[in-house]
Image (cartoon, rainbow, N blue to C red; front, side):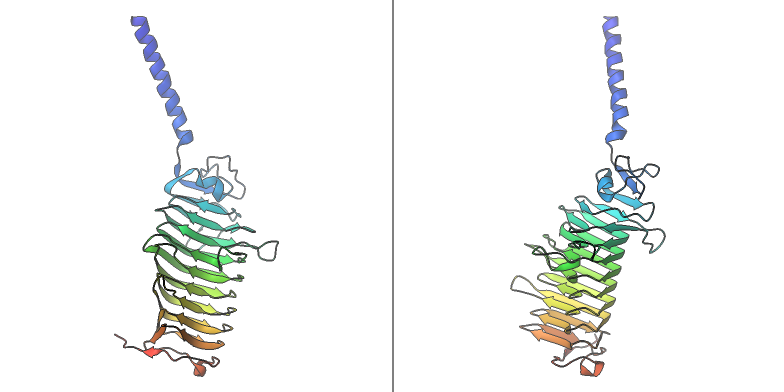
Length: 324
């Protein structure tokens, strides 16, 4: 009997040791690392980094963070968990990049996720083969924050989307988009597109955003509210701002301290939507403002627009409103 008890004890102890030894190998880290000289077979630790975002994301816990050790090109990634992708080296650093051709840079597609993309250059390598589709495409989730990011060279979206830079297409109510300190340039289609799907609604805040040499800089569609400040939407092939609502839901866009200049057609267009202007300069566009359907453009009286600001003809004067 004593011998049997001893054997059972030894067996249990051996099993526990084996389980403890196996646990670290299967656990996901809250912070992982990637490097241009890394290897996706590594555990993605600081001393043994992975090579790509796609390689690191499966080894990173939900709510965790992937950081870059050097200025590598880390490939496109599909995000299906809450995560932060950060290639910063100090405040505002952009030491890492995503280079893709014929696909999206970052795709976010999972329920209830919150994603942060920070300190990164996303390049669709336009002119080198097939350009990328969309820099960041948000199909499903609760929130997306894009901070100190540069997006360039996208636009081969085909039937999927008319947006090159950031396409925000939430399917839940009150999905949040925050974009700050971002440059979107040299894209074949629109810079930022906000267009919820199904029962989705969008709440977007843009600050210090520059969009140029694209088609439409900012396009906001059904069931969306967007507030834009301290930004520049200039030198685009069509419009600066296009607020467009169909029968499925309202669109409200507020612009404060925004410059809209040198766009080939209209500076601002409101189609069955409301656009509010405060301290906005609309200069040297094909035309200043256009209203169609039941749209309205409301001015707080401190804006610079119309033919006197160098815009072409066919302007529709905004409706004055109180500064209160």
